[in-house]
Every structure is written in C-alpha cells, then in structure tokens.
Length: 317
Image (cartoon, rainbow, N blue to C red; front, side, top):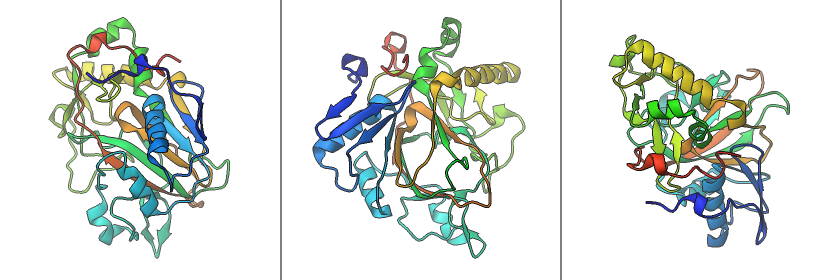
C-alpha cells in the first residue's frame, strides 16, 4: 500500500525559495518563486509533492517553449501522445512536438491550429475512455482572450466528491463499475469512425470502478469520467441514469470546485486521476490558444480495503 498523505501534513508556506499558497476549498495551490525552465531535483520534489497534495498547481509568469514544457512534463512520467497527433496533417496547422496538444479556436487559412474550438467543453477526465487513463496534465497559456471574457477552466475534486458521499451512496458505489463510452468527445461530437449507440448498454469502452484508489496517495476518489453515454454496469438503464445523475450532481457541488481565470504566462498542472475539469463557451471573435501535455496514468482500480482508507487531506477542507 502506498504511503497515504494523511500520514504527513499538506504542504503550505515557504519551502526554501518556494512559497506554496493553497486555494480555499477542496483543491488547488499556487507555487511562487519557481521558474519551470530550470527546475532542479529539490524544486521538482516540492512541485511533485504539491501536485499530489493539492491536485492542482498553478505557476504564474512563466516564459516557456513547447520543448521546455515537454521536458518538464516528462519528469512526471512517460508522456502520452494526443489522439489527434496522427491526424494533424489533415485537419490542424501545428508543426510542434507531437507530445503537445493545441487547445484553440484559432484558424490559419481556414484550418484550425488545434482542437476544441470555442464551444462548451463538458466536465470530463482525460482519456477515461481508455483502459489506461491520463495521469498528470499540464496546460500552458499561449494566447488568451481579453481579461474578463470568460474561457476560464473549472476543476472538481474526486477526493472531495467521494469523502462527502452519504453512507447510503457509499454502500451503492463500492464494488460497482461504469462503462466509459468512447464514441463522443468533450464537445459532444461523435468521434471520427465511431458509431452512435442509442442503448447505453451496448456502448463501446472500458469499464472502470466508480471508487478509484489512487496508486500514489492511497486515497479514494469518485471516478466518473464524463456523463454522456456512460452506463453503470449490470443496472437497468433507468437506474443507471438515475444513479449517474445523482453522483454527478453530488460531485459538482460548489465546495468541490475551483475556477482558474487564465493570465498570460500561466502554467496549470493537475492530477487527472482524481479530478474532472470543464471549460465554458467564449466569444468566437476572440483568440485563445493553450498548449497541453499529458503523462500516461494507470488503469483505475479499487483497493480491497478501500472502505478503510483515510480521506485525502484536502477532501474535507
């Protein structure tokens, strides 16, 4: 069993030249005094611990290249190529490193430089539609709409979602799984080559436990992936839909969510294994470009002794 974070205090305050400033609520912290282009082993240890302790880390005022971002991301673990990497020549104008996903509404000569445009992006965890989900996710601001124009990113803690479950719901979800549909993306669009399935019992995708025990912290989180076309295994459709609706409504309570308002030079790092995130729509006449990298995660599982595991320290704040 991994050493749980409850066996040590959540880091905050000053550590050497770095200052950790936790956000209010269930997740998130800003690290001050850190240059992400020149992170030595000691500073990286602090960054990694903050990432596990706070689920979400913001470092402001950074000047980084795509290559800098890839190099730092690789220190978190093996990198995962984005699903669109092999298709860029046909639908994206981006010739940067293949490990980088461009999230943008900008077009050059009528061709998008990236993906996800300016529409709403539903709540989701990255690659939940795969057997091995994404781990660390890093997002760097390249070009942003004017301040106050929206396009903020919201994050929600799966640890807090699990910890706050009423006992009757914990009795229901322990030992149960969800089939994570592969057909639709986070814009609710049918993926290339995918077929729409009206009966969610027949959807295609991996089955993951609703209660996921984190492989490094040893703590439980709700792992819901996304709402669209998912199915609680072995349930009648009506009961599956009702349970998913109830779990999502519980998960997305205000006290479990933090909202990041982007500034130039922001780099945001979060643990996809125990959180979901979402972006609202924004004005299509403005330009927005963020560059993302992602580390390969793990196949979610629920520990045999999951009910005895202590909560993550940020879950109940």
